[in-house]
Image (tube, rainbow, N blue to C red; front, side, top):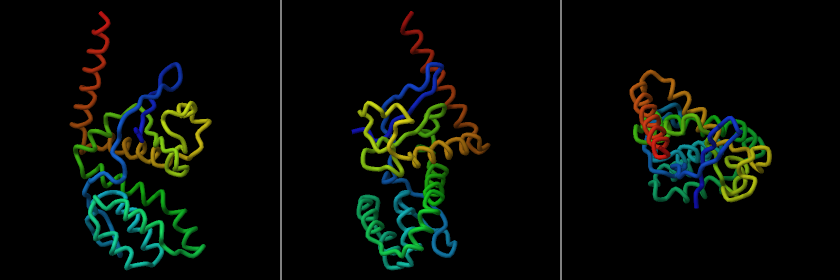
Length: 201
C-alpha cells in the first residue's frame, strides 16, 4: 500500500497522484550532531529521531541501544522510543522540539545522499503527503484511498512530515551546491512533459 503521495497544484485546484516515497526507516546513512554536539553516524532518520527522544528522557541506555541497531531493526528503534518513561515536563519539551529534530534528520539525510536528494527534487512543484491512516501527527490520519484524502480541509492529521519534506526540498533546491542536479531534474521533467504531449499528436 502506498504510504506517500504527491499533490500537484493546477488551475483547477489540486490533483493528487500516488507515488512511493522512501519512509523514515529507509536505509540512508548520514552524519549529524548527537549527545553533547558530537558528530555521529546514523543509519536512518528514525534512528536519529528516537535517539534524541531517549536523550530528552535522560535514558542513556536506551539511546545507546537505539544507536546499536541497524536499519533492519528500525521498528525496534521505534518501540524503544515509544516505551520511554518521561515526566510531563519532558513530554512537553519533547513535543515542542520533535518537529525541529525530525526536520534536522530529514535535512541531513537528503543533504548527504545524492540519490535520495534527486528523488526528492522530482517532487518539486508538488505537495508531499503522508497518507497514513494511523498517524494524525506526522500524517493525515487517512489512507490514500479515502474519499477525502485529496481534500486538505478534511484531513484528520497535521501532515507534519509532509510539510517538513516540502520545506527541506525547497531549501536544498535553492542551495547552490546542488544547482547541477536541479537543472538535470528540470530538464528531465520538461522531457517527460514533452513526450507526454507528443503522445497525443
